[in-house]
Length: 248
Ligand code: SAH
Image 1 (spheres, rainbow, N blue to C red):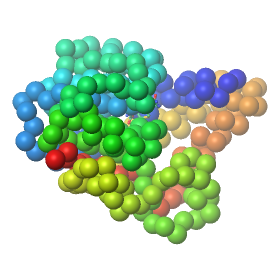
Image 2 (image 1 turned 180 degrees about the horizontal axis):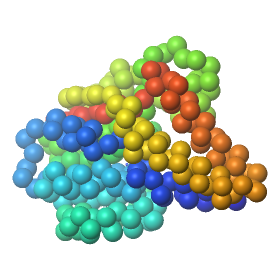
Image 3 (image 1 turned 90 degrees about the vertical axis):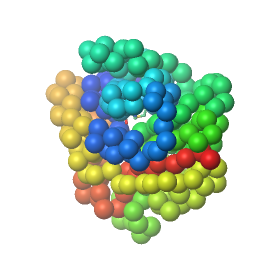
Image 4 (image 1 turned 120 degrees about the vertical axis):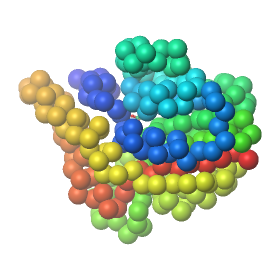
């Protein structure tokens, strides 16, 4: 059992691949001002595209959803058709590290739980180039709510994402990347549990039955179960923040 095969077997079947929910997507969207009637939107690291579909519904514009894992994009294309959104949503299989769109092509760039793949500051700078002047960027990023952390939380983030930092530090990065920070808010706990960790726990139990004779698979499933457990016990220490900013 290869780690990534099991990882995708787990993740492909979840409603989404990171924390977030439609209420938070809508809340962030409504914080943006002065948008054209049919904005051009880029959704980076869309996964199964729960937020892409919501953006298609609320923006009335054209949404291009980018990810480098085709099964996620296949599912999004199917869901867009069932929702009657196939004319407003297109998908592209490409790495966010090689986006190669023309500078200034989008009114809105969106990215939930994915920009850290490039590093937050570098990701912000790349998004800025893609925006028209006056364009908007909305992203979620894992953040620390305090700097003194229990040992197991410190260890977890040292492994997962050593660059994780506070909301204040991220706002400094937003300015350093040439944006005006306009608003930010913390994702509620239910945005982690209802569409993400809840279904993930259920799926882990199913896979543990399927692979009950495979010690390596069971060990991997246990590390993912522990991740959920750490969040449940320490959601006062870390979480996700939505940042909404404007390119002047
Ligand atoms: N926005 C979705 C998915 C977040 S998970 C949600 O909130 O549910 C992060 C996503 O980034 C995954 O779908 C993963 O396939 C994608 N990803 C990871 N590295 C990438 C890269 N280099 N280029 C494009 N997408 C990438």
